[in-house]
Length: 254
Image 1 (cartoon, rainbow, N blue to C red):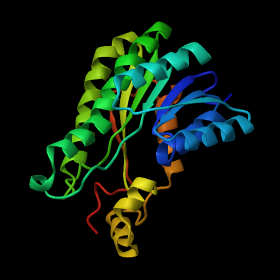
Image 2: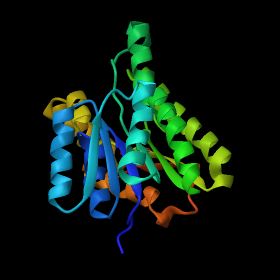
Image 3: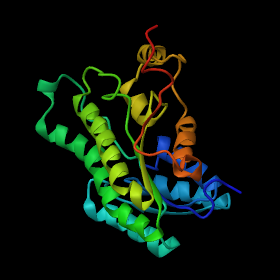
């Protein structure tokens, strides 16, 4: 039996990177997927690939900063598949980089809204749907940045991602008695569009790889494997955790 057989899952940020890899993996493991992101064309391609492989998926494009979109994703899970078991709140952005005095308030707010407020909005509508089914798993893509490491020039990103860990812990405590788990996934450097934009020269990529104990960055599929663990019943006694999947960047000093 596959690990997510008949589980109904929402994944945001599914048009590329970790979300895209997780969608493909979850579908292979039997999940019924609602995938979200801003880019409709990329979502449609993803859904087509999943369906061609015998999986079940439907897409809804939108902006995770908007409350109506969070509500609509859950509504689609209900109407298309009958409920919700897993919410993988993965969408995010780096935002503007640089020293704090040079970051505009508008840029700061956009990064926090995209990363942290969107996680809250996702949970706000996913939790009642999970309560209807008596159990569920919330997963939030956070980061080692702002948790174990302070990376210069990343104040807004770090604040938003570390705030997500606090949100995770509170939701785990609030909803654990009702069968719902909440965990934060903290990847290290991962080969995504966002990471390539940040480290856009061979020298920068070599530097980032060298920060990790494994001396490389992750493939999105490697991070998706830990998301699968958190989504599945294999993690039935895991909640309230900030789970580092960071290639040793948090402990490396060489």
